[in-house]
Length: 161
Ligand code: PNS
Image (cartoon, rainbow, N blue to C red; front, side, top):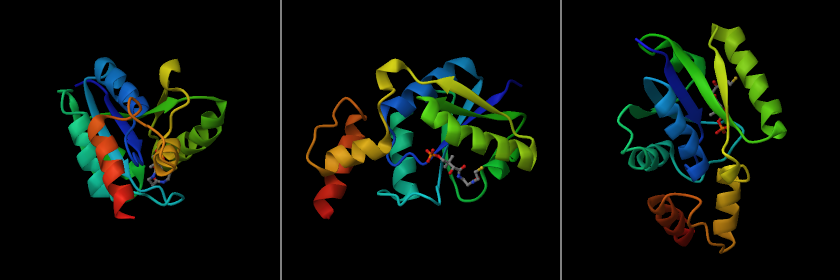
């Protein structure tokens, strides 16, 4: 059995940048598990269940990708996978590296789980869920940055407020 790529994130909401990494991971690894988790340092706009539903729709065309939610330590999810799993994360810039290397080293220290970094496509290097939410909240157009169903969900959530 080949290596499983575990693609974790807050995904609040999933962007086309995330999907670029997930899609490339699905071509590189036998199996990809996309995991939506809580990031204790972020206040989410969407519930974990809503984020998973959006991810499932976005990944429905990728046959070796499954989407799960998880509350707890990422390494516990990694260790619960059948066979070997490595965390795969996209890196946009040096600023991402500083945050990601710390988590990668902690995850290795906690459970010997490896992290592999995949460079983000330059097409999406400016893109983040936080910026998408900020732009949408201020009335900007986020089409082309997130899948259409995510744009609709953003519009609906902002209308509720
Ligand atoms: O998309 P993000 O916010 O960069 O993803 C961060 C995430 C969710 C992967 C990270 O916060 C995480 O792993 N959360 C689960 C709890 C955990 O394991 N914390 C210790 C990280 S070393």
